Image (cartoon, rainbow over all chains, first blue to last red; front, side, top):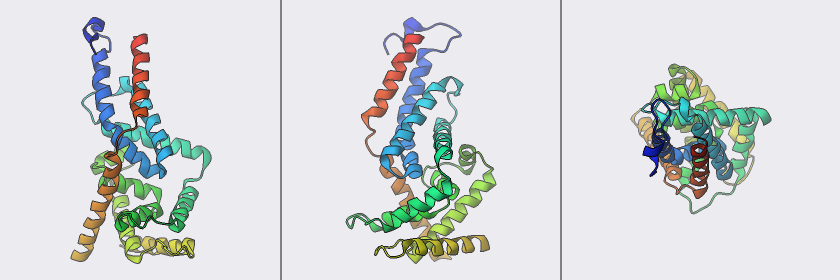
Length: 203
Length: 46
């Protein structure tokens, strides 16, 4: 901006601070969209969520310490936003169950890379807290400590969620829980989930 | 055990691909537009 110097006044929040904040925030938009997509599933509501989170972050910019981890901060905002909206309307477990069953009977694009598709369906079957931990650490590139901060839980909890999620996914993918014929997908999923849970608790 | 490790690695690679696929999408103009509007609002107030 050309008029930065004109507006400069000591002791007041500078427009240059806003500019730096905005630049960093803009760079995070792709990551916020990706994280939102993993939470929401459908791209349109994911983008709504990402936009809401972006604006909440902008409005709260005065409380952000430049130089600290803005990515973790914005992810925390996005996650809080997601769960506060969900709490109003659904019980989360019910939503996930339904989403997973819809995914299971959905007709796949035969052109799409199969493994990626299977992974999406497998992820949809995981309990939400395991899925989110795995995504933050395994895909978002966060350290366990950062993921714990984002999720508001202990580091050890994140570690155990990630390893349970990994084991469960492994089982789901190996047993081929996704059902291509559209047969009794709900039953298939329930039995696979029970297996995965049994294996992951048995260690 | 090694096989399980390899399988986990493969899953991990796919997971990152899935995430990066969205990260690499072009950001819809709407996002930048919303931010621009908010920014001009706040500089009017400041």
